[in-house]
Each structure stands twice: as structure tokens, then as C-alpha cells.
Image (cartoon, rainbow, N blue to C red; front, side, top):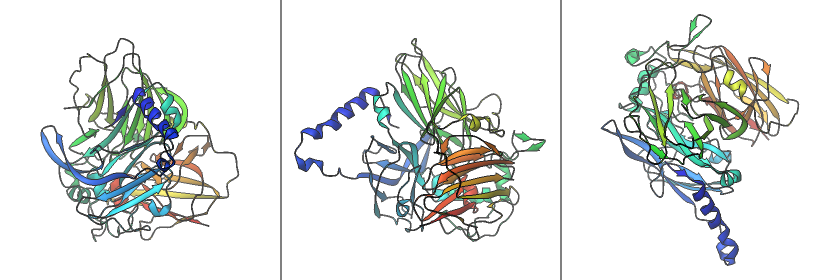
Length: 489
């Protein structure tokens, strides 16, 4: 994983100034960056595990763009099967959004496709839009720096979180869903042709109705007990140790790329300040523990004490004891062993929406009446395993409609006992009400909707096109929890 110091930033900035002294031909567009969807091997607790990944031309995971650098990328498919990469958090032309068949077909093995659009700044990521491939770790950071990131006297550290099974991902997905992936031939990948059925052999691998409770009713927290929980492709058996300066500042860019796991981000003894949600600046919120749902990102500023030391940054699986993370350490600090399990299960995340209520956009949407409002009912069950929007699965879905330029309010009303991280393609939205209480909340592209809760978001409808709107819990998506936000000209 790439970590950039301020010195490196300033050097890059000086290099960027060089074209002012070059001949005119040097002002031609820079060559496209090369990105490969490929396979790779990880060492997880002494076990070699083959996964997928997105590597740049130097073999590093992900892309890190400087301020104003265009997103010019040649994507090569080396995974041996069709794939399609979604640029999560970016606002590309719809034709470049990376959803298979909407409108472009998936990328065939050995094929290359070029992408070229204006990059949306902030902490984002990129991943396959085929659920089984995302579960195989076909994902990577996509960081677009702002000018203020260049001048800030701080070190940047990116953390990408994953859950991983040692078994084939399609087998795990079939076990979780109980064979209920029928009809998923558009936007979500693999169809099984099976009907909605029972849980099959899943009961041996699930946490079921885990630790949370709401009004005496148990929340369903975790679908499956994965074999490993990763931070930058490593477990706490052999965590990444990042060298930081005594008395320095660190910006953590944390990405929850897990398929089906909500994490708490615990900064331990280092006081933290959340400063951005899904790449969008917020008014700073102090704390040492923040929840992060699948698909979401959180930027956290930390202050390293002058005396230095070793400081674990942990990701705690909600409703369970498992944890992962990295360690920030100053030169010469002793780095101790950390167990991959806590002594007690971690609590459920944000059934009361307190964290979301505390986040405020640094620059909120300009006041304007709504041109259109809509409400989406989120429902489903663990047995049979089926998850719906407005009672419908993909293929019989009700589309959400708007016209380009309209101010739109969407209310997600979750009537199930499992939370749903709802993601809208091609847009960032502002959270404007929680359980009917108005607020000028954070900007996001993925919002966590707890059980028996309502979250309202506001946005200005963008390009006239068909944009995906879905739950970012991969087994939920695979069973059809997806619709379209269709914008007319």
C-alpha cells in the first residue's frame, strides 16, 4: 500500500512545476496510466491464498492521483474471465461507470478498455461489479488528492479492509444465499438459475442473530464467519507496520472493501478527528472509535505524541470478536504482538444513527425546494435468504425516476432486521434527515441504513442515464437488492 509523506508531496509538486520551462510539445496530454485486473497470491497466517487484484504498472495495488490529474486509465483484463470495474465514488460519464451490460458489456479476458474523465477528489476505491469477484478481492484504493493535501504538514496512510474465505468465493456466496441468485444477469454478475430457497449449509458458518438488539428484537449482523479479516492484505499475525514521525500528524484514509462486514475503526490511544466521509470533507468530529459500513470511506486525522511509540489502528468486526489492522510506529519503537481476536464481542454499529447525526458537511447543498421525492422500502429475511427494494428483486424492480438538474430527496426505509449500506452510482448526496428529523448532514455516496430506521438523502440529478442504486452488502446485491435511478434529459 502506498503511503506518501509531506516531503514526497512537495517533491512531486516541484516536479509538476517543471513544464513551465519545457517546449510547447511537452504540454501534450500525459500517457494513460496502466491498470491490470489480475490474480495474485497472499500469505495469510502461513497459508498461500490466490486472490484477485487491481495493480498499477509498478505492481502496486490501486491508483493515487495528484490534484487536477485527470483519470486517464487503460484497464487490462488478466483474470481469465469476464470482469467489469466500477470506480466507486467517482462521477464518470455513464458509459464509463463500469457496470456490466449497463451500457457496455463486461471486459473479456485479455481485452483492454480506456477510461478518461475528470477525477472526483477524495478517498475512493475501485472494485469489480460482479459480487463473487469483489469477494475474491478484485478491488483497490482510488485516491484523488486535493490541493490542500499537498500543503498539509501530515503523512497519508491508506487502509483497505477486506473479509476473506479460503474457500472458492462462488461456493461461499451460494452457501450464504441458499441458491437465491436467480435472474442476476445484469449489473450484479453471476446467475445460478436457482429459485429462492433455504439456508442450505450456511448455518455452520454464520453468526446469525448476533449481539445487537432493538426493542427486544435481535438484529441480524453477520451472514458468514470468514476465515480472515484483512487490512492492506494482511492479518494481525503479520500486520503492516508504517513508520511515522514523533510529534507528526497522520491522515488515515480508511476504505471498507469488505463483502459483508461492518467494522469499527479504533485508533486506540491516538486521539482522532474524522474529517471526511466517502471522500467529502466534514466538520471535524473527535473520537477514538468510528463505524464504517461496506463501501464507505472515512478520513481520520491523528496526532502522534512527541515521545513516539507503537500505535495499533484496529478494525473491529461488529457483533463478533475478530479484528484486523495496521500499526503506526516511530523509529525504534517496540512493536508488540496483537491478537486477531478481542476478549469480548464488539457491539453492533449505529442502530441509533448517533454517529451519522454527528457528521456535518463542510459545504452543504445550497437551499432549494425539492422537485421530486421518493421512498424506497428495504426489506428481506435470513430464511429464506432474500432481500428486496419495494418488495421487488432485480428484474422486476421499480425504477426511481428524475430529470437532470432536479433536486431529489430519496428516503430509505429499512423494515428488515439487517442494516443496508445503500450506494448510488454517479452521484454524491447529502444526508438531510434521520428518522424524519432534519439535519444538514454529511455528503456520501453510500449510506448505512440500520434496521427499522429511515434515512433521507438529497441530491441534484446528474447526467441523463440509468444509474445503479443498490445495497453494497454483496450477498444482498447478489440476491437482487438493486434498482435503477433513471434520469431523463
